Image (cartoon, rainbow, N blue to C red; front, side):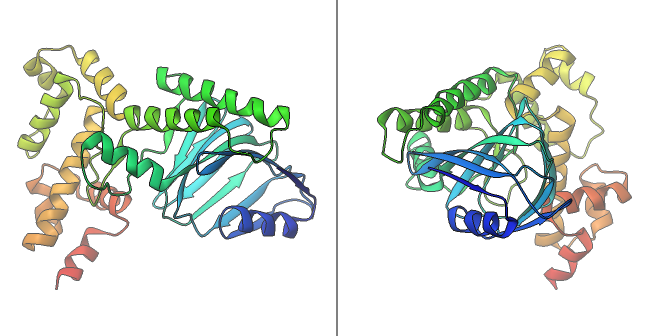
Length: 312
């Protein structure tokens, strides 16, 4: 399947019909060089998309699929929920169902995009965790394609892209279905995700022993002044190994994970126990109160004072 358009309104209508509600704004001129090519995959499609102009896309968000994007050239800045994220060649983005989003495409941007059916991914999580059903996970959106799993994702995309070049039609293909499932397993095994109301990422793959032990320390001792060099010595690893372990497993530094644990506990104190925001911050070990409010808002989308008011 392929489609071309020079009229932004035609491209907007096509994208709304094909994906979700879209609004396009062209920054220079009145025309675009819109091109879209797609082949069917398991419960979705593999796409190559370009607009041929610098544009801003405002979309309602999507409910039934995840979108894994890999730029071939150019790049995209996306405001997704409370986060601002950026893509470029060598860095993929995984957008999860739900939030409205706004993205700004550079004029030279071309990218591969894989729709991954939400139900198929949730069913895979349920099988791996031996649960009847799984909540819809919100994945860490940035994937470094220089990592081992990033390179495997890129290789899988290259196989799918060959079908675009060969002009494969919309017929179902067992190989594309197998590749889609392989991509799902790579995501689940390597990309941290948020589940439910927690802001502390979860992982399906086994946690390295020293990373697990440090996370247990964070949950038990978040109110203390914790030095990562001291934590590393107590755990019996070098500070470098500590940072590398967290980066590999969570794509976050130990301090970022400690901050998430602290902010989550602060919210529990504010919402469940009625503790004042400033007192909650101090009790969880956050001593910069101004920074606490901005961090809290980044995680939860509201200020701690608003959470306090909502309780009454």
